[in-house]
Image (cartoon, rainbow, N blue to C red; front, side):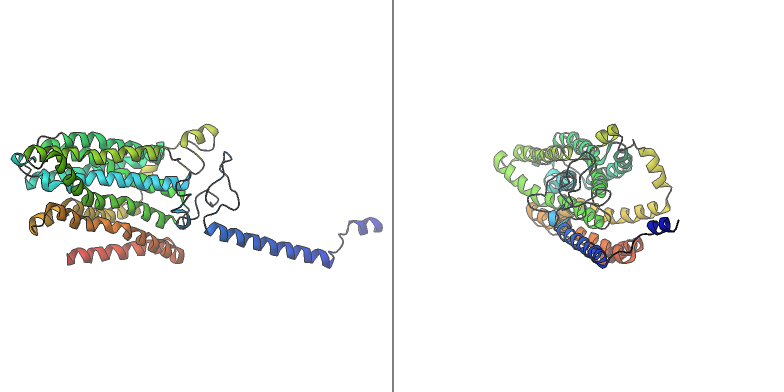
Length: 399
């Protein structure tokens, strides 16, 4: 028994073995540090793969969401599946819907002219009604877009929204009066709900530590379409007038032909979006077939969100914020044209200045939100949101 007990007693570790374990631990720390450095540069050094064995092009977290944006934002890997393809497809898709929705506003100084001058003879009240119709359908469609994203995915929903702009552009290009013009703007306005799909898609692709910056950048560069259209469409109109002539028939034909530009952009964006991937691991259908994902209920998700008081507070705040932006995009061109007596082309350039600020302004907001989140948690995001919103209110009063 004594011999058996002695044999069951584990021998003490020799000093060489302790030293080897310590060196192994140090080596693992060095490897982890090397991985961290490579991942900061956008390299998937760990070789992480999705559920179907496809290697990710960027470093990912445990949910297979991308850990970085900046290092892979531009360059050879900027369009690789799935993360960066989704980012650029969502950004470009949202950009094109903004471009399409405010293309008529960019040409309003020509469209509102009397029919004898090649326009539709629109009054100030009819212009306001058309602008309100474009905004109203956008708001309504955004309520529906969330559940559609939950059920069918942000990718398919965004492709659908981009295609909804095309009938509206056709109606607007063939309009013979105020009613058709308003109907066209209302139909195009449906597509602006792509903001929801843009934010949902990016949130599904990027980790929470950078999702504020990602969403702000994608949303801001998408909103940039509102500024670019005010800048570019008057130039397109001038080019069309060179082809059609600047008489009554020429002007009438020119602004209608200009609608081809946003139409073509929406078609190109649809192709870009549909070639993306719903989630980091694959599309909804293939994941559901493999059992890696269960079918979701959009109505149930919406009911949960609607029952949360925080949702309503955020909705009210965003309504005021986005309302100011829509008003500026709708009214700025005609404001400069009528009150400052500038040329139609210059009015477009001046009106574009507001929208072009999205090139950097939203990204700054996202960076502020992520920095506040890192230091103070979710409460930090809320304080950052409040500070920016209050600053906007003071700027409106100053204006």
